[in-house]
Image 1 (cartoon, rainbow, N blue to C red):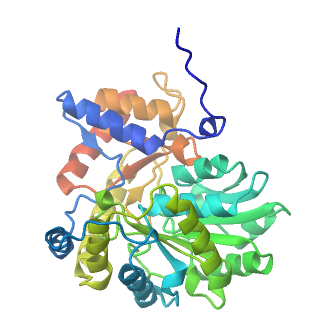
Image 2 (cartoon, one colour):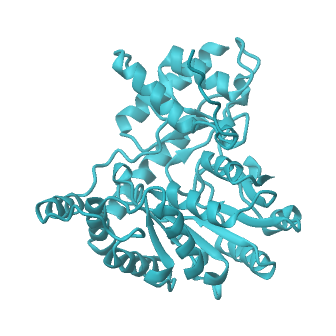
Length: 395
């Protein structure tokens, strides 16, 4: 009899992405013919802009289909640095830029090249699902800092300072935040930076949603005075330019860190797809009007979603100030008809009301669900009608 070898201890340190699990279940139900409303995926419903698609077509016809340098083409790295400077006032050079296979890849690579077993990484709660797992994979310890709904899930410098120990190596901040849409004020971000830089702690800013702010101008802590010395940037084109499937992200970091990321990448993915890189060049260096158009539509959807959720008795919500997620507290449903946590709530909502959401357990809380409003107004209306009716039926 053939004996199957055991899996590595390393792979058992991580879990399958909760958001991907929801997406897979939603896809299964759709294939079975279920009339599903999907609020699970954090994916723009807008098509990739035509000029970006045309750049990819031109790359194919121009036979730009060979290997590129592991960290991306020089033209694209230069264009990313220039875009980051134009948007946020930073001053990165191509030697400090690595093009990755999506923003998640940038986070993974940066954590793996910096973190040793036994190190501590501070992660504010709620957090994007991947942070915990990539830190666990590196053999380090996650130090979770709880934020509260009443403040809009906002992190403070005092909270960070209290969590720091001699083992702290890194803090990961995602603002605007996935899942809550919370936005860390520039002044508070700078206070946190001053603490971490003084203690030589790396500050990783995940800027996936930085262009989608509703009430303030975009900024990057990397543009702070001397920010480049201890700040790491994980960026993505996926949300900003509706390019999720193209898989292009980037890391901005001191040259020594960028070189280490490229070393790791050279033995994993190698270079990002050549054709997608040409599309990415057009995205960051070409017209930017599409970003503003998407933001305007997200803002209208946000207003609708917030109003509808607040009409449901007992549901509370910290108003999202960026990104395209709402993170309502549905704890009022607990204790009713066998529902005791957001995981059970999400499962029942999917099977009975045919609405897909992500339970708060995926993000470190127990009383919330994440609703993505990166979908049409028609779907938002249908889905929120169903959620309201489901809540009323619970009694």
